[in-house]
Length: 144
Image (tube, rainbow, N blue to C red; front, top):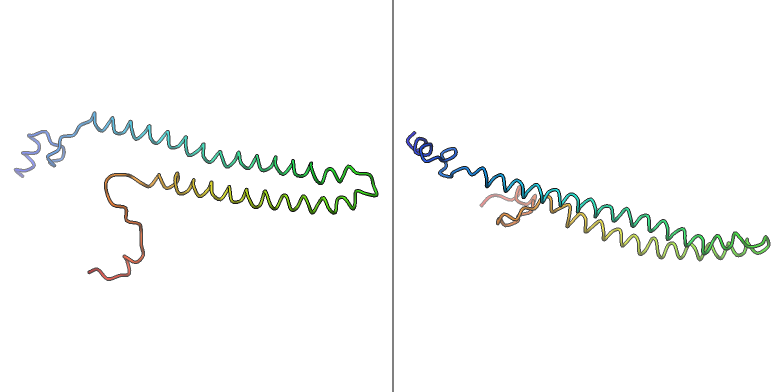
């Protein structure tokens, strides 16, 4: 009872010996809000990069089609069947090699970066505590 009265007399908040500073809390919340807004805009822009890559891939596939199969379709009748046979093989090889090889790797690396760097940054606070990841082992091992 005396501790509570002493805390109330000294102007402490809740009797913990610390004075409540509204200005400090207000400034801290302003900083948190600015960081949140900037992070949201940054994360949205990063995800839009993947959308832009998909548009580039579509245009690249259109160019491959125009330079191979469409060329065979525009040939006169007797030669277009034979030409389409070989041009389809070339188109398929180019498409598989470039779009399915390079672009799948590119998209995988972009999404990996987005998840590990940007999405996980929502859960990390650098407040001086050592990071301890969740482990099921701590639940099943006996406490020493």
